[in-house]
Image (cartoon, rainbow, N blue to C red; front, side):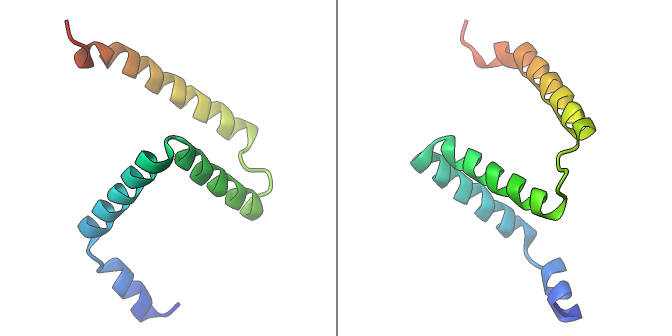
Length: 85
């Protein structure tokens, strides 16, 4: 990797990149359902384990679970906005 590579990366069109990523994952979900997200998640987990063998640490897992529970509570409270009455 060179300094020019880093400059090109920093100057890339981030809006187009984000749109492409969104479109890619939307198509993956349409074709494969939630399995595509699970496979990507597992690939990321395995990569992290190769970089940091104790990943995720017990403390990180506990924090992650707490964050997911909080998100679930917030989604449950907001769910009424998405239902018809």
